[in-house]
Image: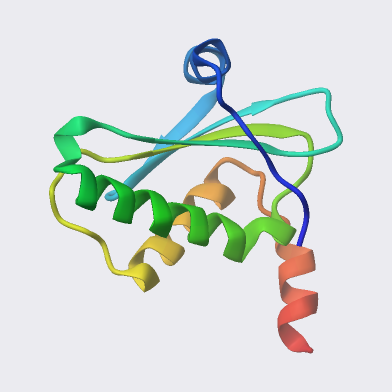
Length: 121
Protein backbone atom coordinates (compact mmCIF):
# COMPACT_ATOMS: atom_id res chain seq x y z
CA UNK A 1 0.00 0.00 0.00
CA UNK A 2 1.36 3.40 -0.99
CA UNK A 3 1.33 6.44 1.21
CA UNK A 4 -1.31 8.80 -0.16
CA UNK A 5 -1.21 12.46 0.72
CA UNK A 6 -4.52 14.19 1.29
CA UNK A 7 -5.60 17.57 -0.04
CA UNK A 8 -6.52 19.77 2.90
CA UNK A 9 -6.46 23.40 1.79
CA UNK A 10 -9.33 25.09 0.00
CA UNK A 11 -7.06 26.41 -2.76
CA UNK A 12 -5.86 22.86 -3.51
CA UNK A 13 -9.46 21.67 -3.96
CA UNK A 14 -10.31 24.75 -6.03
CA UNK A 15 -7.35 24.21 -8.35
CA UNK A 16 -8.43 20.63 -9.08
CA UNK A 17 -12.09 21.62 -9.49
CA UNK A 18 -11.32 24.54 -11.85
CA UNK A 19 -8.41 23.23 -13.93
CA UNK A 20 -8.87 19.45 -13.81
CA UNK A 21 -10.83 17.13 -16.03
CA UNK A 22 -13.78 15.25 -14.60
CA UNK A 23 -16.38 12.58 -15.23
CA UNK A 24 -19.73 12.31 -13.52
CA UNK A 25 -21.17 9.01 -12.36
CA UNK A 26 -24.37 8.07 -10.61
CA UNK A 27 -22.96 8.20 -7.08
CA UNK A 28 -19.66 10.10 -7.41
CA UNK A 29 -17.84 12.65 -9.56
CA UNK A 30 -14.08 12.27 -10.03
CA UNK A 31 -11.85 15.28 -10.81
CA UNK A 32 -8.24 14.66 -11.89
CA UNK A 33 -5.34 17.06 -12.40
CA UNK A 34 -1.68 16.08 -13.02
CA UNK A 35 0.83 17.31 -10.47
CA UNK A 36 4.62 17.40 -10.53
CA UNK A 37 5.05 15.07 -7.56
CA UNK A 38 5.92 11.40 -7.44
CA UNK A 39 2.85 10.58 -5.36
CA UNK A 40 -0.89 10.94 -5.64
CA UNK A 41 -2.89 13.39 -3.58
CA UNK A 42 -6.56 12.76 -2.88
CA UNK A 43 -9.40 14.84 -1.51
CA UNK A 44 -12.91 13.68 -0.67
CA UNK A 45 -15.83 16.07 -0.73
CA UNK A 46 -19.39 15.42 0.41
CA UNK A 47 -22.00 18.18 0.27
CA UNK A 48 -24.41 18.90 3.10
CA UNK A 49 -27.17 18.11 0.59
CA UNK A 50 -26.08 14.47 0.90
CA UNK A 51 -27.76 14.12 4.30
CA UNK A 52 -26.91 14.38 7.95
CA UNK A 53 -23.42 13.83 9.41
CA UNK A 54 -23.87 10.07 9.75
CA UNK A 55 -24.71 9.66 6.06
CA UNK A 56 -21.93 12.03 4.92
CA UNK A 57 -19.30 10.21 6.99
CA UNK A 58 -20.50 6.83 5.71
CA UNK A 59 -20.14 8.07 2.12
CA UNK A 60 -16.64 9.37 2.87
CA UNK A 61 -15.62 6.02 4.33
CA UNK A 62 -16.99 4.13 1.31
CA UNK A 63 -15.21 6.45 -1.15
CA UNK A 64 -11.94 6.22 0.80
CA UNK A 65 -12.13 2.44 0.79
CA UNK A 66 -12.91 2.34 -2.95
CA UNK A 67 -9.82 4.47 -3.55
CA UNK A 68 -7.73 2.14 -1.38
CA UNK A 69 -9.00 -0.84 -3.35
CA UNK A 70 -7.72 0.54 -6.67
CA UNK A 71 -4.81 2.61 -5.32
CA UNK A 72 -2.02 0.46 -6.75
CA UNK A 73 -3.58 0.54 -10.23
CA UNK A 74 -3.84 4.34 -10.42
CA UNK A 75 -1.02 6.10 -12.23
CA UNK A 76 1.19 8.29 -10.03
CA UNK A 77 1.57 12.05 -10.15
CA UNK A 78 -2.05 13.16 -10.01
CA UNK A 79 -4.28 15.21 -7.73
CA UNK A 80 -7.73 13.66 -7.41
CA UNK A 81 -10.90 14.96 -5.82
CA UNK A 82 -13.79 12.57 -5.40
CA UNK A 83 -17.08 14.31 -4.75
CA UNK A 84 -20.07 12.27 -3.58
CA UNK A 85 -23.32 13.19 -5.28
CA UNK A 86 -26.01 14.90 -3.25
CA UNK A 87 -28.70 12.27 -2.78
CA UNK A 88 -29.49 10.81 0.63
CA UNK A 89 -29.17 7.19 -0.43
CA UNK A 90 -25.99 5.37 0.51
CA UNK A 91 -24.65 3.32 -2.42
CA UNK A 92 -23.68 -0.32 -2.10
CA UNK A 93 -19.94 -0.88 -1.89
CA UNK A 94 -19.85 -3.12 -4.96
CA UNK A 95 -21.71 -0.59 -7.09
CA UNK A 96 -19.38 2.18 -5.92
CA UNK A 97 -16.28 0.10 -6.78
CA UNK A 98 -17.60 -0.64 -10.26
CA UNK A 99 -18.45 3.00 -10.91
CA UNK A 100 -15.11 4.27 -9.54
CA UNK A 101 -13.17 1.90 -11.82
CA UNK A 102 -15.26 2.99 -14.81
CA UNK A 103 -14.61 6.68 -14.09
CA UNK A 104 -10.88 6.09 -13.62
CA UNK A 105 -10.75 4.38 -17.01
CA UNK A 106 -12.63 7.26 -18.63
CA UNK A 107 -10.13 9.74 -17.14
CA UNK A 108 -7.24 7.54 -18.39
CA UNK A 109 -5.55 7.20 -15.00
CA UNK A 110 -6.29 3.48 -14.51
CA UNK A 111 -3.43 1.11 -15.42
CA UNK A 112 -5.36 -1.78 -17.01
CA UNK A 113 -2.25 -3.82 -17.84
CA UNK A 114 -1.09 -3.91 -14.23
CA UNK A 115 -4.62 -4.74 -13.12
CA UNK A 116 -4.85 -7.69 -15.53
CA UNK A 117 -1.41 -9.03 -14.57
CA UNK A 118 -2.07 -8.96 -10.85
CA UNK A 119 -5.60 -10.31 -11.27
CA UNK A 120 -4.32 -13.51 -12.93
CA UNK A 121 -2.10 -14.42 -9.96
